[in-house]
Image (cartoon, rainbow, N blue to C red; front, side, top):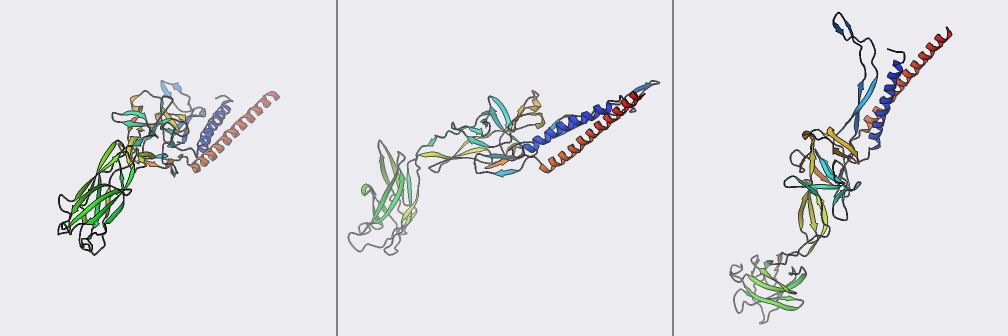
Length: 406
């Protein structure tokens, strides 16, 4: 060992601890970075023992001290971070295993940062980088996750209106009884417009027992008429329990069936309580909201009440996430050509992949208490190496002074 060995050894400590402090500093700096995965440093000693040979026997007894330390790299902690709720339905966090798949400039990347938003073209993108998130279709095919903001749901004209409750069967006291009316019957025509009808019921039991004459008006104009009859049991008579109404809408026309199977006709005095039970049909629907459920399926909500399932987000898993290379923005790339390092694609909640939490983001998994402890240890180690360097320098200076004095 030369007289300078302790100086070189202490310098390895200074260099390594400085680099390690940079890693800790990076962890702390990204404390509030969604999806960030912190790093641990890897120290390895440079101690090499001299070997000597005597009588044909190799001896490995150390006759020289080690040569210091080096920082051999880092190990990324892929432990899950805490979740934080947000007000955006497109913010997503993975509760469990997996990475989001995004495409940035034709390059495929993987991230746990789920701060997504829809751009003006309808693509779901990373809000920070603009990278497009990927959907997975049958056959393991990836494609850009997209929801066209201008899409609509076609109108469905009303085809059936049902009635419930009771038409009083008490005979009228006059030859021309006052009709009982059910108003505000909302229906949708073939053009998707909402129209309001009124059904008028006139007791005709003086002519035919259990009979009611029915007229259908729109804006005080009669558009249809018919007759319904009830049996002695109060239930509608077969063949007289429906009335068809033709509803013109420009060049188109639809037919609405008024069904009275749910109605009755009993004697309850002069009061009738007949009312509309249900009416099908929907107006033209425009897209009003997009949410993503726990399985990664887009749920498209339209103004007419329809909800339609869209694409499904792709997730990726890796046998060894440490094989991924960090490329910034909490993203990683595959740099190995080995088959074992390639991603396996799948869906949330399936194949060991976690479920999605909408309106949540995953925070950095930085343990601030641990990082502060690491800072203290590195500071003391740096001070120790500095002190060794200082003492070594003083010893050499004393040696030179003694040699010069001779």
